[in-house]
Structures are given as C-alpha cells and as structure tokens.
Image 1 (cartoon, chains in turn green, cyan):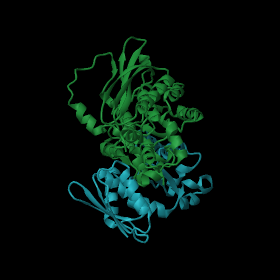
Image 2: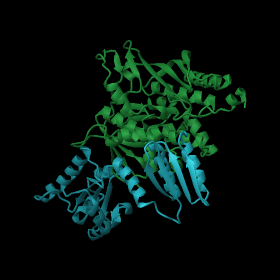
Image 3: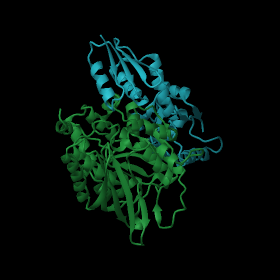
Image 4: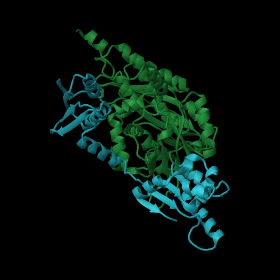
Length: 359
Length: 206
C-alpha cells in the first residue's frame, strides 16, 4: 500500500484514545493543579475567573460592556472532518453563551499531522469550524497551527455581554428549577458511533445536537429571569450541577426519570460503551452525591458521561421553568426539567447533589 | 469452543466491540481476554452483565486477565456481583433513608387545635429547611392530614414533587372515612409501611 493509499484510508479517530470532551483533564486533577498556582488577587475588573469553575473569563471594560474570553479544543471524536470542525467550534462557542454573552471573534487552534492525512481532510475541518463561527454571527479572524502526531482542533473565542447581564454558575435561588436544553449521552453515543453500534437515525439526532449552537436556547432563556447558568460539558450533568449548587451555596436534587436522553444511549451504556471520562467524573464527584433511591448502573454512567457541545443548564423560578421548557421544545430541542435547588439542611455542604429515581 | 484474545493497546471502544463479537457467537463458551486498564475491565463487566455471562478478573501487574464463561441462564458470579455492588455502594452512599412516620394528627400533646396546627408548622419547617426524607408515612389519625380540606396538603405535595414518597395507610383512611377522597397512588398498606420502617436508616416520629 503506497503512502497515498495509506493517508486516504486512515480514519480521523484512529488511535484517538479519547475524543471530544472525554479528552478533558478530570475535575479533581484540574483542581489540584490549579490550587498550586500562585495568583495575585483578582482586580475589580475581573467579573469571573478561575474560581467556581466558571465557563469563561469575563472582564469589565466599562459600565456598558464586558468581554468574555474562552478556549476549547480536543482530538477528533468523529471521522468526518467537516463535522469534527463544526462540533469543535460549536463546543467552544458554547462557553460564551453559557456566560449570557454573544460571540464576536474567534481564532483557530489547530494541531495536525500533515503527513498522515490528505490535505482535503485539514481543509474540511477548518471549513466546518469556519461555517459554524459564521452561523453564530462571530468573525473568524486568525489562529495558530502546529504539526503534531494527533489532530487537535478548537477555537479561542471572544464574546461580549453587558456587565449587569452576566450569568454565572452561582446565583441560583433555593426552590429554583433546573432546565437542561439538550438531551444527555453524547460521550456514550460517540463511542457507539465509533463502534458502529448506533443506528443511522440515532446518529442523525446525535449530530443535530452536537452541531446546535446554544445561542437560540440562550435567547429563549433571556425571556425569563435566569438566576444561574452554565453549560453541561466535560464534567457530566452530575459535575456541572454540583458546581452550580456549590457556587450558589445550595444543594441540588436531580430527578433521573425526567432527564432527556439521546436515543439508544441506555442500551449502549449497559453494554459497556462508557468513556473513560465518565469513570473519571464518577471519582471526582462521588463524595458530593447522595442517592435517595437505587439507580440503574447505566443511568448512573450517563449522569457522569462527559458531554461534548452539551446543552445550557438554567436555574430559574419554578413558575418560569415549565414555560421555558415548552419554548425550548418548540425550537426542536430535547429540553427537560432535570431537578431543583434546595436550601441546605443542618450538616449538609453546598454542592450536595441528591439523586432521585423511581424504577 | 474457547477463544483467547489480546485487547491490549486497543483504543476504546475496540475492546468492547471485539469481545461483544465473540460473545454474540453462542457457540463460543469461554473467552479469555487480556486488557490494559481498569476502564477496560469496568466496560467489559457491563458487557458481561448485559450478555448474562460470568466474568472473572485477575490483576497480573501490567495487565488484567479476564475470563468470560457462558452458562445456561447463569447469574453473575457472586464475586463479580459483589464487586459491582461494592463499586455502586462506593458511589451510591446508599441511604435507604429517613422515614417520617406520622401516627397521629398532632405534634406533641396539649390543646387539640393547637397540637394539630403545630404539626402543620413542623412539616412546613421540615420542607423549608431542605429535608427530603425517603418517605412520609401516615397511619391512624395521622391520615387526617390527607383530608382535602387540610391546609398542610400543599406542603405534602411539595415533598412529593421533590421525590419523597408520601403515603397514607388504606386501612386507616377507610376507618376515618377518608378513602374516597384520596387518590389511589397515595394509598399504601401495612405491609409497605412495615417494610419502610424496618429498613429505614432512621425513623422520625414527630
């Protein structure tokens, strides 16, 4: 087989140990690494930084505008290069929406083994990313690329938001309901795709979810008074709900019967198609969870499943939650009301997540 | 027929795919596999369970040796089942939970009306303080809380919405003439009440 054949036949995901957000460093690992960083105390202009695992950095420029800065990249999670570019871009742009902002500028982050793939593959990845940036209304204005043995793609994104309209992890009120705008299970579903065990129709639903920008969901949320906001990505639903509860000084209740799942992921998880990142998240968060009822193993795996390009998680008043969920349904999103925030009882710590399930 | 397979160095989900292919072939009775990581072991344990085959695993230093054995409707081996349960127990700090048993419609003893309204205050306070017991069970005169006219009903609904079981003894509801006025999914029996009380970590009797 000559070199041309070899490069033409190689799958993007060949040799990728963990693609998408499953490649993220674990929460516990990260926390340890960041704890040793000697940072000067943050100036007043820094609205959000590394504390509370916020989705992006927000810096106040004036009373009218704050800039949002975020970066996201990962190895291929799918073989189609155009889709890979689209998904990586969608995922990176999401963190701007997760702060309540609007993306304006993006830079490519690219590592690529140019000897291992035909040049069209690289072009397609960049095209996918560029098209998605254009769709978001932002401008792709440059980037940086290096040779590396494994492909990596993503974006550094700048966004804007009014300082008074920044939406953070913290700020949820007790008795707020939690609304998740996309169904869960991308980690498992992507493994299923790799294993060719996911049906064509389920794959289509998966791709639709992975390439859906969170801007539309944010617009719907803005019609109501949102108390706290994050997006559900690498730490899984359990992890991100924990971070929101902790930052808000509350505990959360998650109702697994009500969480929307991507098609076929329960069956796939049952058969062991669970990404390593899910086990990592389980380790990181097990001490913050409390199981009120016994939960089937596959559902447990799914709440730890690292999400790529996951949905937004809103915390808002009970009376607004169902109207928002209905608005999101009309957009064709698989939105669900997944739980609520509660005051802490005596001896309970902020960030506790109670898991409910009825068999 | 027995099969041996070296799954080391394979990227997820190859180990699961290849093992599944072998296990799907019903003529293969035993599969011995070598894997690299604990993640592989955990994934294959799930596969084995879904396929209803026995799995045993031994750590051989830089790899694990896994043996899958097919049997006629065999349950998971005791050891593997125990290992899975242990793993689940580790994450699911399983609270069978706190059960609140309301055996009378008063809180403490004293003036009748005062004692009844005090019980309502207690339940409201319990809810507002964030307590979410596994179940709230009502029996004897305690079932009077389920009277549609009782002002405590919204609080009980809140507990129900938050995932707590809220139920009243059917026998008692009948005795106090309330059975017709309570929806059947909120009615329970002495057997269930007994089970909850006997398996609860803690029973609270206000």
